[in-house]
Amino acid sequence: MPRTDTERARPKADKIGTVAKPTSPPNASDAGRSRLGDLTRPIAIDRRITRRRRSTFLLGIVAVAIAGAIAAALFVLPVQTYFAQDESIERRQTQLDQLDAVNAELQAEVDRLRTDDGVREAAREEIGYSERGERRLTLLDLPDLPTDLPDGWPYGMIGDVIALRSAPPTTQNTPAAD
Image (cartoon, rainbow, N blue to C red; front, side):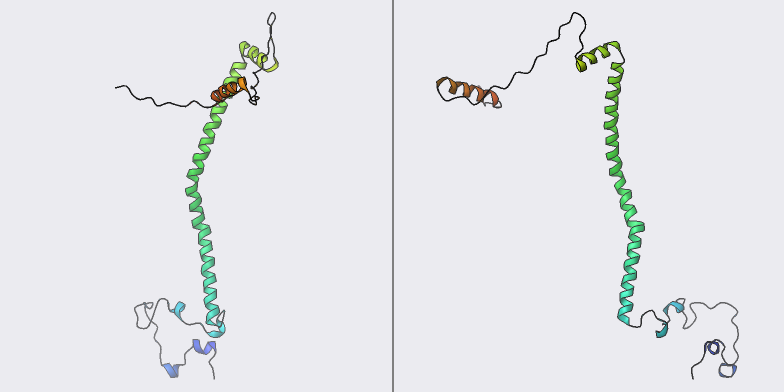
């Protein structure tokens, strides 16, 4: 007949005899004892999460994977972000320097436009303003010359001249004088 939990907890005096209470807590060095005794003691089959060894192994792998994911989320990713901040800060600093340069140019233009001469110059450039006695002339750029010339005597030489002028200059190697 199996014993109940209360019978296991209270040993019978006739089988064991008198039990003396220890004066100090048991040490790990005591014979047959271990500090990990509770952790290393086998768990009864009816109290296990899974009954088969293969399922227990798979659950262990899943638990390790979850622990690894948590460790990566808590340690690896923040450390990578921390080291990537230096590059990000350098890029942002470069952008800030460029914006400061543009702002300085714009501020110089605003300061120039706050003067009378600056207002006159802006009026001339933007809306074509001219003062009394001035005559405004608008000159357009010269159009490109046609390059599709007819075949024949004078046009062949003109085509060669146009080709020479539109080609980039070439350097000639001249021998050094002795």
